[in-house]
Length: 388
Image (cartoon, rainbow, N blue to C red; front, top):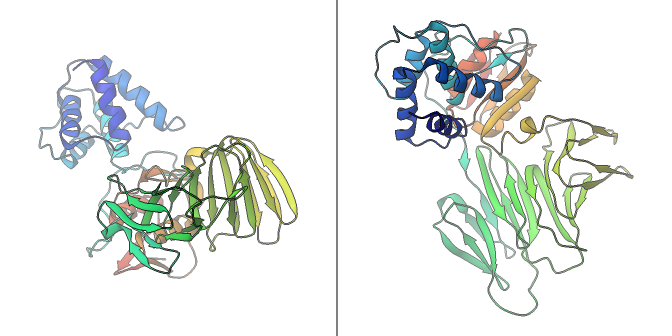
């Protein structure tokens, strides 16, 4: 296999875009490749890109066996390959499959151990689920609706596209009648929406966005609850405003994320591209890319610089990603995505978590990874018990 082909497969694998055939091709190449130097280069480059602060693990060679078997490839152990190379390949495959975690104290990739979780019915990950409430009060369950035109509001058609995303299309001439729609995701749901002006919205679990079916005034205004990521279409002289609790965000065209869950202590707006003006508690501030404005419950508005943008938008990219996150912060994300209730037996464990894994994993797989940070769980239906 040419180096370019291997790089291509690795890139697709880590983005979660590999087909089953491509995954098998990648696993088989790692198992049989004769050119160790070329494979080492690709593995080093890939590891450094995704985990620049963590050293390549020095694990046993048979870890590659488990990784390859998880891809459905029953192959023999690697006897002729260098142990460190087999271990590195295994770690990369596990990382791409979501089986990678770093603890603050260990700062090392976890070593696979038998899970302490009892055998229970698993909880699947969330998916594309949302309900659209129309201006006349009718509701449409989007995840069970077919593609095509779902309804018409004024002179705007509401269309579910082939990729599952909701969009609006003008159906006639003349002044559009302004009606308000609300898209709401449940716990365990997420959805994408293209607003009538072409702006795109990603809704995280347990979130909502309310918007007009046509932006006819001098500004474009929407409101959200929960968490949403925006890519705003530019319209000169027609600012775009988002209302999130007591915070107002104004932009002309930009990419930003708002986290306004009621269970969080702070409403956060993080800017990825462009510029936004934050108004809250009688104060205004301008954000630059990489900055985050946080509005606390007492009305204090603070701005952080050099925020980890990958961590902020990890949910949009199909990942859980944490950087020294405490136990409650991690559990709140699991509650929203898996639609479970977290119960603590005794005191909340003082743990800090860091690393990344895919949100497409079943809950028990996530818990197995978290257990490597010296915490135990028990799953009883939709109750997730954090044990002493």
